[in-house]
Amino acid sequence: MKTLSSYAVILMASLLLTACGGQDDSAPVEQRLEDASETISEALDAASSDVKDALDEASGNVNEAFDEASGNVKEALDEAADAVQDTLGEAQDKLGSREGSDLHSAIAADYRENLGPLFVHFHQNPELSNFEFETSKRLAAEILALGYDVTEGVGGTGVVAVLENGEGPTVMIRADMDGLPVKEDSGLAYASTATQVDASGKEYPVMHACGHDVHITSLVGTARQMAERRDEWSGTLVLIGQPAEERISGARAMLEAGLYEYFPKPDYALAFHVAADYPSGKIEVPKDIVASSSDSVDIYVRGIGTHGASPHKGIDPVLVASQIVVTLQSVVSRTIPPLESGVITVGAFNGGFKHNIISDRVHLQLTVRSNNPEIRMQLLDGIDRVTEGVARSFGLPDELMPEVVRSPVETTPPTINDTATAMLVEEAIRAQMGSDVLFSKPAEGMGAEDFAYFVEEGLGVKGVYFSVGGTPAAELDSAPGHHSPFFKIEPEPSIRAGVEASVISAMALMPKS
Ligand SMILES: [Zn+2]
Ligand SMILES: [Zn+2]
Image (cartoon, rainbow, N blue to C red; front, side, top):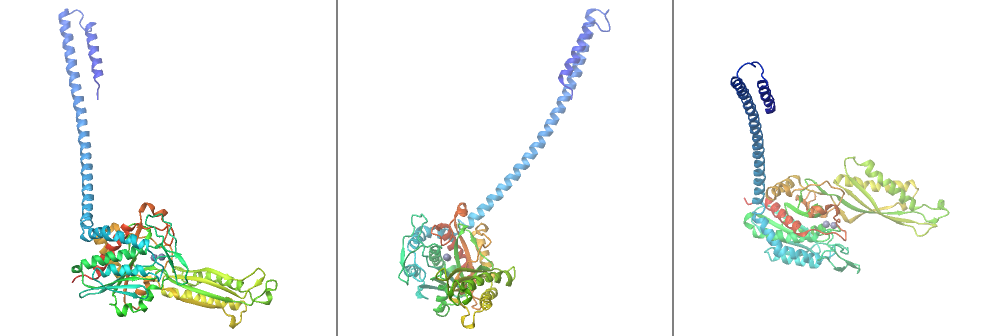
């Protein structure tokens, strides 16, 4: 594009040319002036037409660029508006199913009026395993008031509440009731200062350091919603308060007391545990393995005592036991398939009396974990084999063979969810509470849970055991673990989610036909 200044130069040049008498010096002044003015006017016309062309071209370009830019902006704005619309729609859907849901708001109201204060009561009044006297009494009274048939004292302090509501399957929901001998140091305003004397006469500080107070409070909330919604489901509901989960003995005690004979035997059994390492209110429904088997094993190693300076005159049980401990580590690493899990931990090693005496006995205490009943037997048999083999290699005679004792009390099979039922329950939770509530986290250890007994293979009871988070998301990294004196759970979101998921699951399993 030409510039206006170039036209000015041309103009000046023609003026100068004319004034200095370019071609025709002899012509009269008027004529010369006229010629000059004609030349100037021509030059001006040409220049102005060029300027106009240039301006037109420029404004055309500007217009084109503007059109293009405004087209782009419009497109981007349309896209953004669509995205906002979609997000709004999704949010409205969620609000529609959550806030608008009758169940969700009914539980929120129940928490404000009943469950919140009830949780504080349970938290401040924890009781030791098998000593849940006041806890079970209060739990029974709360559920009795809702119209259930309630029986106390089933397998010790166990509570069984039944609500018959027409044809259909029987669903059992279990909550464990016991606290732990831990002195609470959570700093909570409602922290426990309770103490309790156990069977040995010793007094212990007691704390709900595993969150079982969340479970029993939730059971009352579930009892209320299920009773108030009898027209929405059909079947038989059995709610149980179980003693002594921490000793993995309460479930077995209730079964031995006739839980499945004197009360309606369940087709399905549900339970949940609040989890300090999960965000508050989030739910995980495992599809198969939930908790590992646990077996306590005692090994009594015998030896032949003698003077510490004359080891050849005896058989040293400390060395025999040490060799047993070392060889036991080969059972998991060398005898079970590498993709299976197992733990053999020797938690206690006690023997000997003095520096210069070779003693005649050592006591080992072990815990054994697995996720599969066959592997469990393989580990337990491996312990027998290693113990006897090592003892023989030291020359111990038959009458001094070590004794291996599997605890008849501290024992539980792995807890394995019924896959199809777990999927059905998870779908029902997703449909009513939204996908966001579901959460999943790989297991990090081999914890055990005696809920396994209620759903053990061969009983025909399909089990679903799920987790409900209890720690604000921002505090997860620093949250104290279960059984710690600092343990604290955020009660409202965990209890509300626990009740809502339990009610949704029970109703999904007992639909009204
Ligand atoms: Zn627990
Ligand atoms: Zn526990």
